[in-house]
Image 1 (cartoon, rainbow over the protein chains, first blue to last red):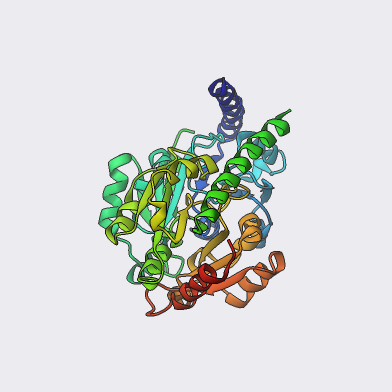
Image 2 (image 1 turned 90 degrees about the vertical axis):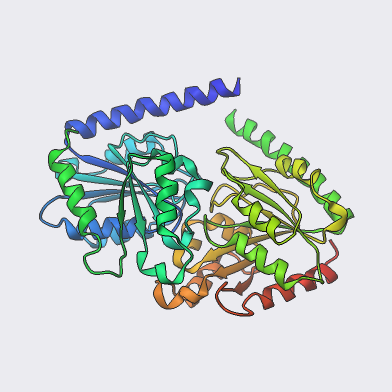
Length: 218
Length: 218
């Protein structure tokens, strides 16, 4: 009985997600579901991408948080259109929340849409929002054992961004071991390494994303 | 309708939690529900506490993870009794899981029981496990805005441990601002600062915990 109910909720979510994806695809808005633990650097990745792609791609943002509008304030300050979703206690976004947020964004003026999910390495798994790409951030101070402990999101991700690499000298993080663990559960994932404190560190990621925007038939 | 169902689940959890607490209190086992984001240092705090209280208090551990037995292996290596719970995908422990785990621990030989919850800054909130103290860890690389974004656990915590303070020179973390945010939502919380890379850094916490064990009428 319980399984049946869960399945019908998931299907309802999948239906709305598919509507979102069709609308976003029709408008050629490359859409990213951005996920990570709290404080791994989701908002920083978005801000650095906006900076790196200035004049090349117009970026919009849906900000998901349990509480506060701290992140959407930061995005707004650099002039990108943004909508804040507060889940109130919910541990992930769902397709209906995104559907509602889309109505409040100037979709004609957006080439790439980031959906910053709630900071959580478990719950966003399995909830399709209608995105084209799932991007997971894993920060070095979290440690290199996360793929073993939280396999769900690591398995689903199309792209993995290893963040805060400037902290590598100070934390226990075995990069080759981490990458082995990742490829053990997800051989197709594309990996980038970044640090907000290293000049030009986001270039490779931004170039790749820009390439996806032009070449990918979304 | 939905609210009613949720309420009855919560009540069922609360009932088992109360059974756990009565059993643990009767046995004078000081029990801690240890919560944080993934990779904030829960297992390290337990290992450092075992080391600091050697000869003073016997520590047992219940390890909660979505997957893997990495943490219980680490605890086992220092000779402490431990039980691993894998939630399989569940984003927090509940009182029934703890009840089951208690049957597999040598309770006569334990003075302090750590229940290491699943790494998650949202879901463990509101789920009583039968503990005497809720201890929350917040690591400096996660950033100083976490009390605003995830107020639930910061409001519930009896003790807040700020971890990875050795990284303060390299990360954006305004300690006075963070502590102001915390006291804005929780005036009673007791705060400790620790770093696994600073000698003697866990002493103040361990001394306090040892004091709680002798003085607290659990």
